[in-house]
Amino acid sequence: MIIQGGMVNNNAWVYGGRSEKGSVTKNTVTISGGLSWDASATGNSATLSGGTVNQRVYGGWSSTGSVTDNIVTLSGSTVNDEVYGGWSNASGEVKGNQLTMSAGEVKNIYGGYSWYGSATGNSVIISSGTVKGDVSGGTVVMDIFRDSSDKGSATSNVIKISGGTITGNVVGGASPKIATDNKIILAKGAAAANLQKATLMGFDEASTHSGNTLTVEGEKNITVGNVKNFDVYDFQLGDVKNGDTILNLLNDTNLGDATVKVT
Image 1 (tube, rainbow, N blue to C red):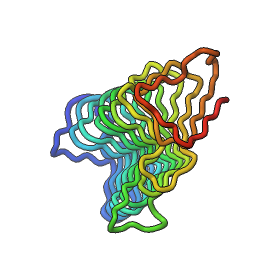
Image 2 (cartoon, helix red, strand yellow):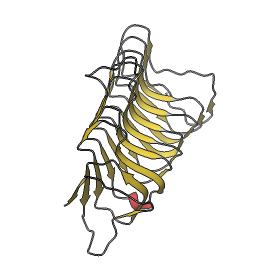
Image 3 (cartoon, rainbow, N blue to C red):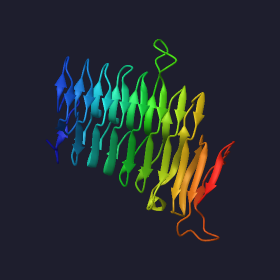
Image 4 (spheres, helix red, strand yellow):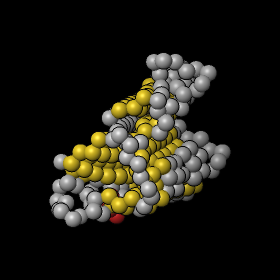
């Protein structure tokens, strides 16, 4: 089912698949691709191409299980709350979820979100539209009452930007514990994106971090509010010539101990 117009109000709930005990798999709906209380949410999708949604949108949601390979596609709707590719309310792994935005307006968007599990290999792809707040490839919050040594990693999450407007923080992988190999990519077309109020961050406040990378894919004349918390800056020059400006930053920037690569 795909909503192409109209409004979903604050009291409405729409599910592609819902299970109190078993798995929810490969369902398709506009707002909540799949919801599971005690099992996994896998391979569901949510597509919004018009209208207004006042509630949160989830590709896949689970209270205790893993949330994997769910997809959210935004191509024209206004969402007045957060949008999540995948969400786990507990220690379940949030992996391989994808959120693609090509039009519309949203508050904050997350490729994958876990309270105290792990967020791995989730992605956010933005080519147009407006994000009024923050963007995260993968977020782990870590409930202090359930903290454990083997949980809490945000790993290999990707944000790719080739257009659109973003006014908040853009974080590859957010975790208070471990953030590794997360990536933000400024692709062809990013010079036309409105990122003047945005801060690009490889990680947020991780106590352990490595390999978090900002990659510029052959684009130039990109203007960004600021960049910080990257382990690697990777400039892939393409047709960039001597004297061209690749990245124009509007605020004072400290690169710290980051490695700068030019290819």
